[in-house]
Image (cartoon, rainbow, N blue to C red; front, side):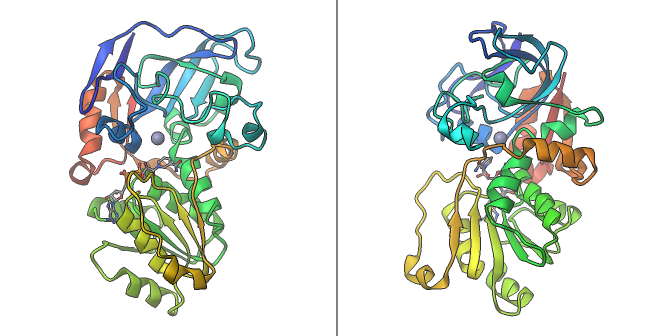
Amino acid sequence: MKALVYQGENTKEWAEVPDPVIRDNGDAIIQIDAVTICGSDLHILKGDVPAVTPGRILGHEAVGTVTAVGAAVSTLRPGDRVVASCISGCGRCSYCRHGRYGQCRDGGGWILGHLIDGVQAQYARIPFADMSTYPIPAGISDEQALLVSDILPTAYEVGVRNGHVQPGDTVVIVGAGPVGLAAVLTARLYSPSTIIVIDKAATRLQAAKDLGAHIVAAPDSNILELVQAATGGLGADVVIEAVGIPATFELCTTLVRPGGRIANIGVHGKPVTLHLEDLWIRDITITTGLVDTHTTPDLLRMLGHGQLDIEALITHRMPLGDIVDAYDVFSRAATTGALKVVLSR
Ligand code: NAD
Ligand code: ZN
């Protein structure tokens, strides 16, 4: 089969590799129907994720059709359409028992396209297949289901739910990449009164407006003044960080009101200064998290009922074999306007 193989910093190739095979009783093999590229894949290519070694097939966001299952797989059959979740779970360890699959202690967590071969390929091996795939209900398209493999649960769990967005809240979302935009969509489920989105790229601010943000602004404008004006001088109830750099996290701490919440989604590669000397007196809660994907069944149901309109998050569609070009389009998002690029077989 063909697969997108990481070959060391800044190098990748759509190469011929051996087909995946069942290695463990709990595995399934899926034929990839649609797959997408994540900001994390770009981090890997920059060499920011040393756990990914040359020869690794990348990718952790896909939908596919089951072609084979191990002897212990009880809920899947060949022919089933499934979401391959970005997070795998053994289902038995203490964290999995609490639905915290991201912290799985027994070989799960973020493994696809990271610690084992991923899904940017014609076929993929999915370990713990009963726990790590989700059947796609009839009426849900591959494209809709694809966004449930990572960005929708990430934004919903680590941003909106950790941030406890409530009806009437003012929510600030810093970063309007696919994850920040998915936070706009899933925050709206709770009817906040005002959603303010901050991003450097004009194309992404426009996308945020299209998805329902009330106010958008570039980080070089006076964001603090803008948020205070929108909240009668109080500050935001919830601030969601969806970039992953020190400047944006520190910005979040200035925008939150006393008693408010900062939900960090961004993957940080550098230390961030926490100004406890200013923050201690303001009753602020800060949450962090790796997505667990425990809300995936809920999100699929909401998609089925038309509660989440993800159409605008998909900007480019290409054949799977053009994935190297797709990386180019995705990595130049500020000029190409790319959000999610869907590659289909
Ligand atoms: P992305 O790179 O597409 O989006 C980041 C956005 O931030 C871009 O639109 C960029 O223009 C904007 N930006 C950059 N610098 C900025 C600044 N100084 N001020 C304002 N905006 C700025 O990434 P994404 O795919 O949307 O992911 C967002 C973050 O979430 C990343 O850090 C990613 O690694 C992380 N992530 C976390 C989890 C998790 O489980 N916690 C899961 C998936 C992704
Ligand atoms: Zn991802």
